[in-house]
Amino acid sequence: MKRVNIFYISDFGGHSTAAKNLKEAFYHHNSDVRVLAMNGFGHFYPRSEKVVDYIYTTVIKYFPDLWGKSYDRKRLVKYLSPVRRWVNVLSFRKLLRLMRDFNPDCFVATQAFPCGLIGDFKLKYNLTKPLISVVTDYHPHRFWIHPAVDKYVVACEEARETLEREGVLPDKIRVEGIPISIKFLNTFTKNDIARRYGFSLKLPTVLLMGGSLGMGSIKEIAQRLDKLNTELQMIVVCGTNEELYGWFDHNKGNFKKPLHYFGYIDFVHEIMDFADIIVTKGGGITLSESLAKGMAILVVDPIPGQEERNVEYLLRREAIIEPRDIRSVPHEISQLLENKKKLYSLKEKARENSMPDSSLRIVDLIMEEIS
Image 1 (cartoon, rainbow, N blue to C red):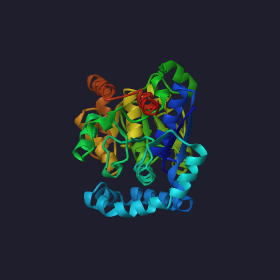
Image 2 (image 1 turned 60 degrees about the vertical axis):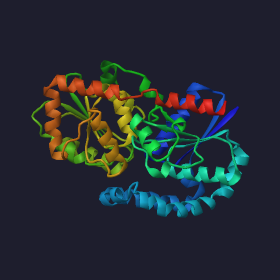
Image 3 (image 1 turned 90 degrees about the horizontal axis):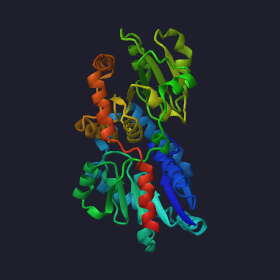
Image 4 (image 1 turned 135 degrees about the horizontal axis):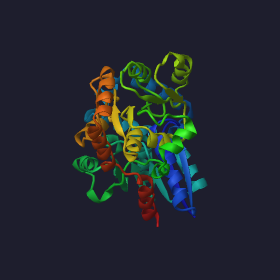
């Protein structure tokens, strides 16, 4: 039986979702594989993980410009590299124990930190077991690059070109997409979904999401859409944001338009089949899911750094719309609902830029490496 060890960081967010999606695809694809998906930071630095998570979330939420200014800066990457290598060495004893207990045939990383950690470990102990980096945004930053990586999986040709400019050999790079759940390969009729969740079939539907963490200006956008003259219904997915869910639960009576709200769910693929338009952040996983479902996508307030680069790429592909600010969202939605040609054109562009079978493609690649 083959064994695959997938590393991510943090139990919430796109990196862990990507790892879980790959694990799901492995078991769908081949039952003769054992997959261990683990929070690398939590495993190797359990005392530090919550502190780092808190600092990251705080900076993203309250000081996004600071994050944007430091993101992927060549000088900063060069300055931090020796520090990262020193920190990585502290984990080698636990990694050796993991190698003894699980003995993986392949390492997979869905985030740059464990990618560098495993890369340094491979060089230290002259390991030949393949390391595959699965980049979960449309632009790979410099922390991904490591001489011990055997294959880079990226979302698009532009990402391939970015890595090649940084010196990565072309035969190390494969364009296979960002790993989304194989559930997105299924399609559902609007009648079935409306009956299951109580949605109206007579109204156009706007889905509001802020990723798995429920971040962004979801409350403000919902309130502005409620004042729009155009008839519509709203579906809000709050993710793990209990405060946001509580706010909608408390204020649902103040909305004039039909409002449906959920916490963290595992059926967003069904809701995306029903909704006409999604308003969301710029995370790689959510955008890839929305593209796979051929949705009209509006991205609001992307986080400076990785999300901004996701948005810039998809804007060049004419696959999304980025309103100037949240005040512009109702106007953009009204325009789309009134101009069916523009709405369907945006949906077609989404489909053209999607890879619904990305996880299965990546699993095929990994199996090639370990066969």
